[in-house]
Length: 110
Image 1 (cartoon, rainbow, N blue to C red):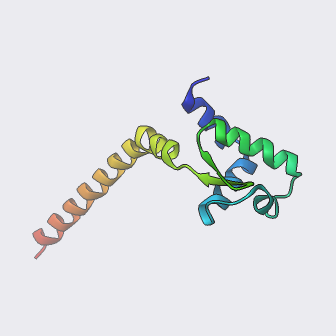
Image 2: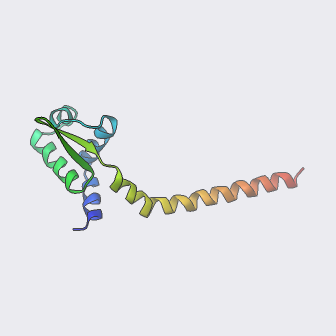
Image 3: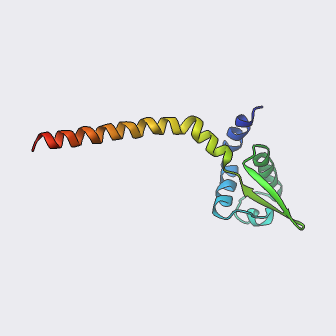
């Protein structure tokens, strides 16, 4: 499975997206802290975090005996650049063209 496939697979689950949202709100959380906000077992949260780590969406840093989880936004940025950004550019270009046309039409009436 390719890296990008792992990212999409990880993002397909609402529980994993919730974990990413929690880390976005407060980066560097322990498993216990994340479990407080999840309606699932500690074991299920651990499995979701492992999939997020495998997709490189979460990085882990050990601080003493605590394992801290951090959001890694790089794979999300790569998805944006590859698929979303190119569509956004076209839409913004169309809006710019519309604005230019409306301004031109407005000046023609005066």
